[in-house]
Length: 89
Image (cartoon, rainbow, N blue to C red):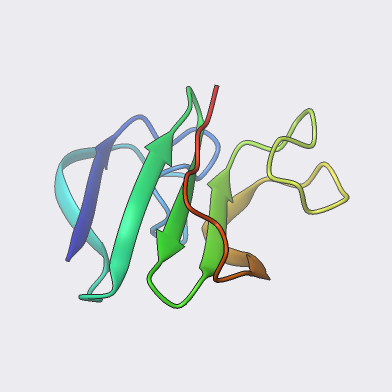
């Protein structure tokens, strides 16, 4: 299971809103989560089947979705079973 908490100004906690959280909130219950990488206000989540999800601040297009709209829920970016590593800056 994936939980998040803290600052949620840009929806980076992936809980469907922009409300800060002072205790852990369930984001996703999935045993197939392979890797997670967090940036300052966004994150990437890779599942074992190659699904790559993004969420949070997208002011500079850092989510890779070809727009500048923030996302407050995990959003599927691509599916590629050849992805072996993810990293946010």
